Image (tube, rainbow, N blue to C red; front, side, top):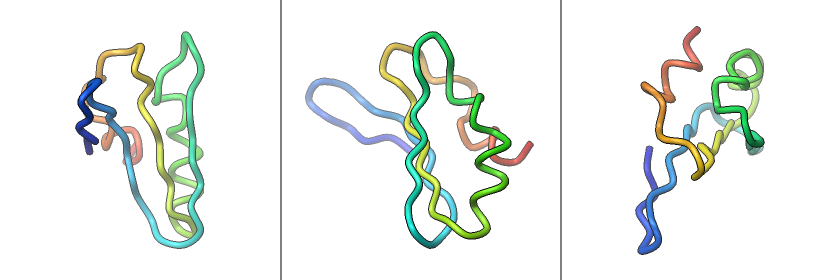
Length: 67
């Protein structure tokens, strides 16, 4: 998903239901570092994974949750 802002777009993943858990990666990593946590948490929580602005959108943020 993308949030469109005047200053640019923010890509993110939003999956699951329940209390929200926000996962943010640090430089120089990317959102794929959260794949196992996403799988473990989406059964009980709403997991939101923000894709840092410093990186180009990788090939399908949704695919990391299905690995």
